Image 1 (cartoon, helix red, strand yellow):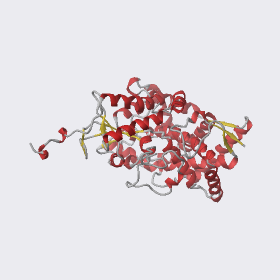
Image 2 (cartoon, one colour; image 1 turned 180 degrees about the horizontal axis):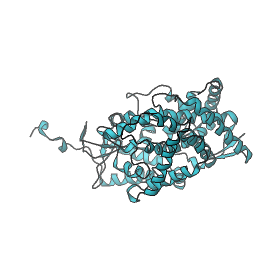
Image 3 (cartoon, one colour; image 1 turned 90 degrees about the vertical axis):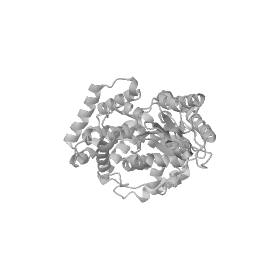
Image 4 (cartoon, helix red, strand yellow; image 1 turned 45 degrees about the vertical axis):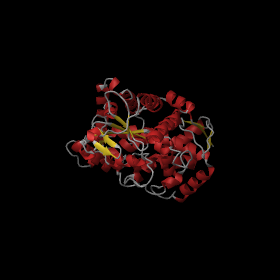
Length: 447
């Protein structure tokens, strides 16, 4: 039999041994799941920081890459095809070739997100995904760095940042994460749903409860009454269409038959939580790097008359926070057909794992792996570049990335504009940063 006549299914990709698979589960997947893939568990995050578990996960993946080369590497898991991406070019391929043949509606992801958004674009496929994705892109103005409603959002950011600083100063001057995230979500609720949602902490708590259920995926029954309540409350906000909110803009957009607008908004509320984590860590990066902080302050002053400042250095700081400490460490796809790679064929139905910290922190190849390097984000990144994917990439890229960067950078700017910032809880060296920074344990002194 000639090589040309061999069926592709007889040309499998390299496969990890049972021991290597157990090591990947122990060092990479179990710690990531334990921290909470949908909503973080603060005690586990603190332990991960203390024990350098994220660094161990990167080193484990490097060991496999050293042995198997480009891969992809099939894990040895009975009853489930799962592949770990090891090569930068394959990261680009998987993300750019989504949703076909690399679907965003991966099985494990679907099991988690169905707890609060079963018809969200992220876990849809085919025509339904296309309709839902288009609605997200239009509502979030995903093609523009400055959302067309930005001038409406900026007063909200200014008001809530000033209120936060005043609150901290009135209570001793210490800014902790809970105080910060409460203020951040007042911004989020007002921007997404309208000013009347400012104090609707019940909505945030309900979303968090359902996200906590999502951490358990298949292993916990869906709280159908809680999910229905969440979606009913969001639908009410769409019906209310409060002027100045993204919900009002979405309500005015043409709707295709399967767009399911109310089911897209929980994902926004979900995504703004890790955005807050990245922002708080970004403040820590700036506090640890006086030179960059001074440059950021100059940029804030230069753009202070703009209706919606671009603030590229602060945006780059948030992107660096997400590179150094990814809030979506595992990007998941699932093959819809057999897919041929240079080293073999990946079966249909394979869960494809892109472990972002491995590519963001691969010090075998990146001299900036562990340092604060905001200069990386001064230009658009292309397929020729090393894959730094804080918001994923390709057709599955986060449609709200520009809105997130707009709000986070301006919220940071307002805090810095009203106070001097001193990091009290950690000693950070911007040239050698830890594998994880526990946002829940960060403390700042505002002067």
